[in-house]
Image 1 (cartoon, rainbow, N blue to C red):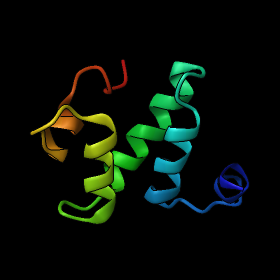
Image 2: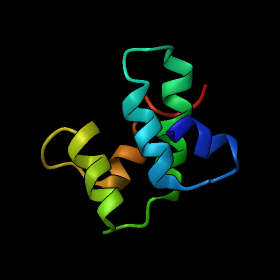
Image 3: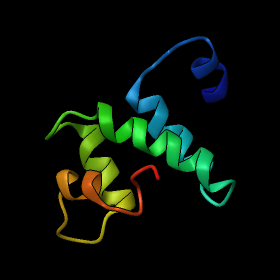
Length: 75
């Protein structure tokens, strides 16, 4: 359902987060692309931002630090 929503043009950062969780362990480029879109669309302090930090960051890190993480940046 997430893939279908994204294909239909639902450019929702929360859907991108869901896709990033679903694609963990799969092709790294696909996972990273979904994660980058989720990070870019997450508003500071939002539930999505908090969930991204809880799922992908070390304890005590912030959404800003997660966005700046060189492992997540496209190269």
